[in-house]
Image (cartoon, rainbow, N blue to C red; front, side):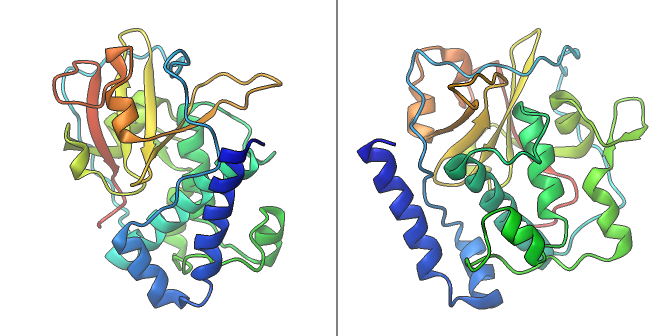
Length: 257
């Protein structure tokens, strides 16, 4: 780990330590304020482009919105956002947990959603290196709402624990717009590169994603500042309104706030 990574790690740990006494109300306010510290991973260089998901589904003609019968309350939605960004940040700083098996862009989203919506008991905290750290309040789901964890709607109307990147936004999220100012932590940035699609996660102060490729020397996880992505050498990855490859910002259907 180089000096820059060490400084980022200390900054992240300092944020978590300073919030240890926040309690549930404090964490809700923190989620509302959308304050996230950048993770201790190097920002990708211009020569290292995001690798699109290998999903081969056809491109959407226009942003599609699908309905869902399950919706979290505003308070639950804020807690979910805090958990989702916390779990993704943990993958970036400590490396991917072995429990996350399908490692690509949409796999990161599916994993973070499932882990956010489960009960976070001491066994889970210990296994994820979060025992004794400041964490968001529990979402407190009932049995009906709990089913959303692995229930993704597919294009044919069926439900599955697996969903592709394009089905994630077409069938399980609603279009917010092509302005990143409309994004809240946990919202998705969707790119359509023609023969493949790619998802990124808005973390407020940075954007997180998985390249879709894993090697012994590279776990595929990336964190990038919005301004750096807007200045990317390959303009197909610019999250701007004039980029036809950027479909826009999407919000998971079960979130009400």
